[in-house]
Image 1 (cartoon, one colour):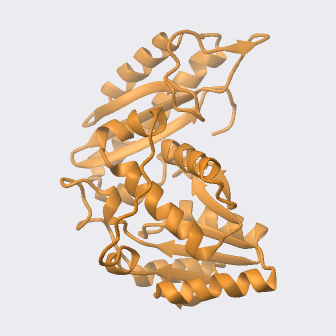
Image 2 (spheres, one colour):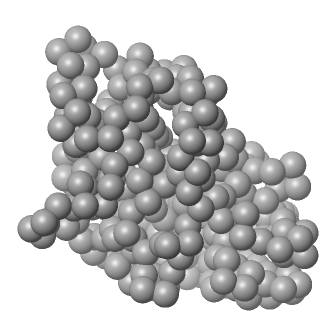
Length: 292
């Protein structure tokens, strides 16, 4: 596996791949890799001739009281994992290289996709996400970029950005990878104490209960939302940030009845964020599907 650390080098590699007509897949990450990232790399490996993974802890998407300095970093361990998963190129660079002196152009999303939920709780977060993702898409010239569905609002925002700005890369949103007990895989899970780790899978159980209500015939979004909020509030040691039912593409809140035809629900997504101490865990589940 090739290690690339310079912006100029990844640009040259992009141009070489284009001239050779190679299909390129990109897996953007912030490192501290786990098997959820592995599932994205393996999917890229199955679909593309060249697989690039990026590791960049992006300072733009961290607020002043968030965990940028403490965010877990293990470049050598991550490098070994990527190689074992079949990655061809690891691109990692510094904030000063990504945002050099004089940098002043940012992607600032507007509308419900960036204003509500994580956009409201973490002001400026999605500006940082959109800016770095657009840079990575441009730097690698990838045909497909792979993202995990755990970060559903981020995925919806990136797909919208690619559509609005005519980005040629396809955005592939892949299923949430979970531990055996249902907890969504996340780099931040390492922050949990043993007691918090034992309680955290109840987030997924609460989401499953919301889907069971829909599959049982409940269509009142307010009732589903309130029941989800109660289930999350009952998690020992947890403090919910929010719980809601939204359209999975626009992230607009479903206000009354979940729409549908012939008794089947239309696309709807239950979303949840719970804090355990300073660790913030997010998860979501489609209510109109049987699978995770």
